[in-house]
Length: 430
Ligand SMILES: [Zn+2]
Image: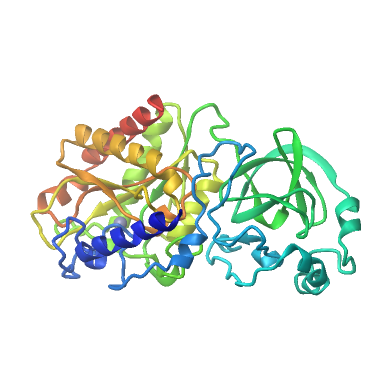
């Protein structure tokens, strides 16, 4: 049933890549930048000319449960491929598609599957490997009955990978269902490496390794917005997965473009507008989380998405400027995932709506040309997001007129006001 959904992203990716060589010109002229002024305006330029998202990557995608709501009982399957009897026993595979400790690597995933009958036999050996569970309890019975849990003040947590929710705190306990990365629960107890969570008044268990505290949004009363000023003073050309569980790698953070007339760097412009947007939003009663407030940082695109989520923000707004070989190109666009995105399709509707609202607000306020909302699954900072996300391409720094305007404080303020108008509109019409 998932096959068609899985294939669609590859088809759209292929189409996109034809028009997006080096991501130098997302208007689709298919030409490389000249390299003087623009080195990938979206900050997530696809460096590779060949892209093959493999089917197995898609299986790790958490789909449809990233709505930020408390999960209810029911099918919260994360789209796993294996049959019902299949079981992952090792701690390393209890969760899949996890953001690693450093926010980088998705866990590799052994392919073995086992029947329930075999699990007990292998448990001791696997316990020894993982060191996370009772080492001499082959039957598991004591473990199921005897683990002591400390009651804690109930707190909201979210899953950092596609994980199993179990009836008891053991990897051999029956699975209620699997849930996607980014699913939110109330945690009320802590045991030996296991967390006790409540679903509709019943207690279930998830390995603590795959849970993190979810901050309440807008603790000060207003909506909390995460702003990512694109890029940084130095690109980081190391690679990171394109999305959770993906084997396709992409540059952590690219250098961005540069004003052909003003010489202004995209990372400078992005932060200047981001700071104005922060002030504007705060003046309207919003709370703002800034991914970066200086140029001298080294934060990959996936880390930025993780930071935005960990902040408790409800939406993620990424500020960028565009570049093109065609110096006549001008205008603003916003970017969101496609409805078939293998990682965050559950975020599509809200991300598209956010992108539409922000583009409308920006172009109305700044008076610039409205290009389009570009739907693409090639942006790691989108694919790793767990909240509705948009990339704002404010204008072309390769267009002399627009570059000059973009460098102007007053024009930057108009852009900030326009983006804030779009955010107002997003929250006003759910
Ligand atoms: Zn950029």
